[in-house]
Amino acid sequence: MILSDKKILEEIEKGNILIDPFRKENLGTNSYDVHLGKWLAVYKNDILDAKIHNEIETFEIPDEGFILLPSKLYLGVTEEYTETRNYVPFLEGKSSIGRLGIDIHSTAGKGDAGFCNTWTLEISVKQPVKIYKYMPIGQIIYFHISGDVETPYNIKKSAKYIERTEYPVESMMFKNFK
Image (tube, rainbow, N blue to C red; front, side, top):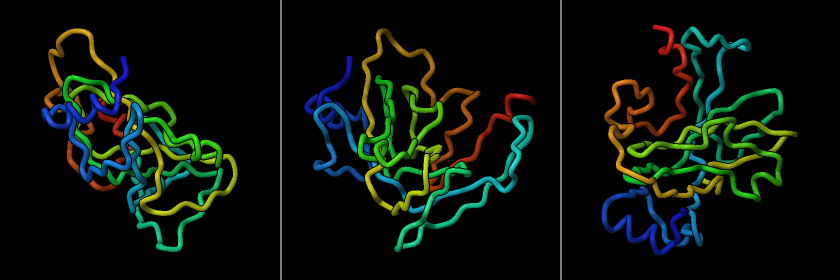
């Protein structure tokens, strides 16, 4: 079951959902629109290795925008910090973004109950596209969970993405090999 706009507002009032900054005009019928933050990152190496820490280079999107190229994977970040308790948040690209040929995630659209952070975006494009900081980029949809959660994400010992950040975060897959 997906939460409606009224239910999202109720859960924000109860403290089960936090969106910062929250702007009511970004609340859709059954989702909340999020925006591209001001930071992008690219991997320093052209060949990535899942067993090692692949370092990134982070830069601020210029006010005049930045052109994304099809040959690169870009890591972006949402302007919004979110916390979700008792629901599963899903991040999807807005249809207007998809119609520009921009994908905002490869496989990581689902968050976990207890996820508390900004969202790192795995951005790729079909053709060159100019983007701007703070532009609408996606929407979060909240799904009801059936049953109680034993271990929320933010307290899991194996959670790799819990340090609060305003920057994109590189893959931590290498931690699975230790």
